[in-house]
Structures are given as structure tokens and as C-alpha cells.
Amino acid sequence: MTSLLSFMGIFFVIPRTILVVLYIFYRWFLNPVPSMLWQVLGFLFAPYTLLWYLAVYNWFGGGWNWWQIVVLLIAIGGDWTSATHNLKALFTKEE
Image (cartoon, rainbow, N blue to C red; front, side, top):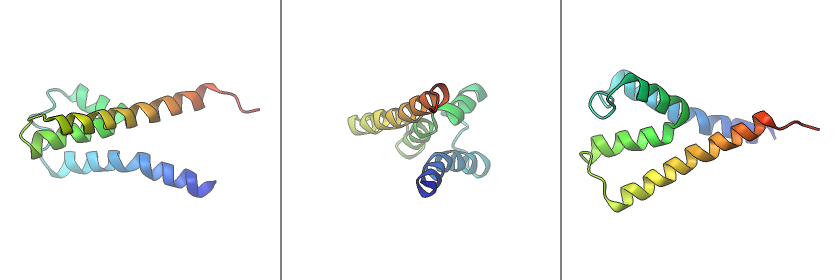
């Protein structure tokens, strides 16, 4: 059980760590994200979606093809799944 929890902890920490490294050492956030509010909201609530949005903007020049939209939907699904799981755990009682 503890190995599963540690794996899940790493799974949720890695995208935020990558975002911090990109913010400090690279200029990925300058043009694609217009305000600091969106950066903070993406960091807190949708790190996978923000990472993919930045990757498309910086690697592919901001052009969205069908496969990039599919990966974006997968990233949104991953963020949504983790958010709903956390909300369920917050509001359910253990018996």
C-alpha cells in the first residue's frame, strides 16, 4: 500500500516539478501564457494540460493538428481524473 501511495505521489509531483524547472531556467512561459493568473491556475489545477499547451507552443509553433488536440484531451482527462479523485477522497468518510 505504501509503495502505491509513493508512486501516486511521484506521479502528481513530477509535472509540477517540470513546470518549476521550465519557469526558472527556460523562457517557455513568456509568450504563450498571457498572465500570471493562468500560470498559477495551470500549476495548481491542470499541470499536464499546461505542460502540453507549452510544448505545442514552443515545439510546434503554436499550430494545433488533430493529434495534438487528442493529446490535449488526454491531458485534460488526466487532470480531471486526479481532481475528481481528490474531491471524492476529501468528502467521503472512512468507516
